[in-house]
Length: 220
Length: 319
Image 1 (cartoon, helix red, strand yellow):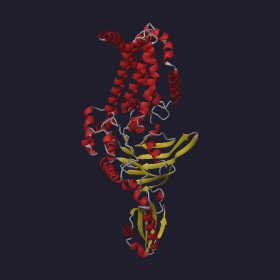
Image 2 (tube, one colour; image 1 turned 180 degrees about the horizontal axis):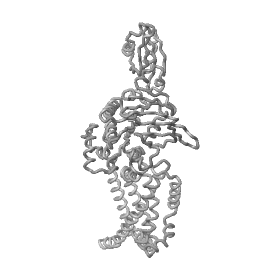
Image 3 (tube, chains in turn orange, blue; image 1 turned 90 degrees about the vertical axis):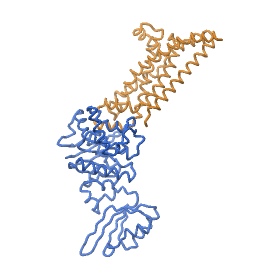
Image 4 (tube, chains in turn purple, blue; image 1 turned 60 degrees about the vertical axis):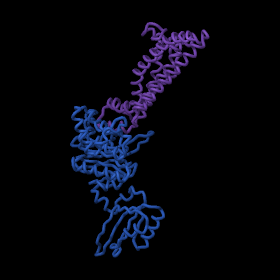
């Protein structure tokens, strides 16, 4: 019993590490790419602070197209890109490229909807005080929507965890990979159950921390 | 001095042109409280928002202190806006910032030294009487307190002009009174020009020196508040923000000496709000002309109207 537990832990730990690494880096990358896109989606809308309806249309369409490509297919499509950037198409590091790419349009939409919750009146008030569009973004839109942005990030991270498990099927490493290799291919039920349990715990923990943080800073 | 000349604003919705403001010309003197009144949809809001170009006028010019704000580029416009304070019906405070941080906001975006900002904000907190609330968040404040923060914030950059966009319309009557006296006090102490738009007649009557009446995007009347409100034929009665009935009574001869109003209020459970009134001597006869609003239950208003008719008065139900 004890030995079985040790065996499972030995298998789980490196995979868990890979998953955390993969999810953390791809979340970061997707936010770096998605945040400006989300902001652009909001400010280029008709009547907003940088009124560019045509650009808004183009952005919206591109994001929708990217979001409609199923993740597994996207992963295969970007293999050449992964090879170009990382040098290989298998392994944890290589998987981060498609993960980040898949999550970027999602992040952009999540950020867009959070920023849109900000009361237009407070934006207008800051414009009336002589704020520049950049100041409106950094000092009004983002701080005012922070609780909602945190909730959105929680959603994004959980989504990326889901994708990363899928990526395991294509040699991506991490917990998903472990579950497939041991749980499915070797009928090792213990490992399968343990993997699922760990994933459940991670998702719960992230959701809980997200809710806690969002509530803590919510002043509305 | 603020000079608005031939200002027009056209909105395009679904390919149709809607003329919100038609050829408006107004002059507003330094240090006065100028009221713009009208029913909702009359164009008041468009007009005041054109003054700091929150909305772009379609035609015309707006000259503030000898500068045509229509000719300013975006950088100059932002500098100009820092000298024009604005307060809003829904206060528009930043919910994620404390009272102190909200008032400091315009100073922060202008980028002054922190110690100067600190001194200024503390002054303003004192001016609006909220020193003890400086670390509260707006959600913890009452409507009146929120508007005080709004006023302090609008004054932070030492503006020469304050725009008030229905600033008391979501406040109860008592709080409205307090905010109005604060505005009046600021106007006197700082010699600050204030432009107020409101659909509430009592607000305009209470503090404005001069008034413009807007109807369907056009200025139908301009003048001293006293003159406009005392002129019995004024269209103001039509646009009265009165929620109840508006009645005009002409008193003749002996009737003019009777305490009609007091008896009316005493006999019926109604509130009478005098909108305008005067007594003139025509050919040696006293002629009283009184316009007032009645508020109360429908029955009581009907009863009091009938009672007035029985008194041998000439009455006219205006609304």
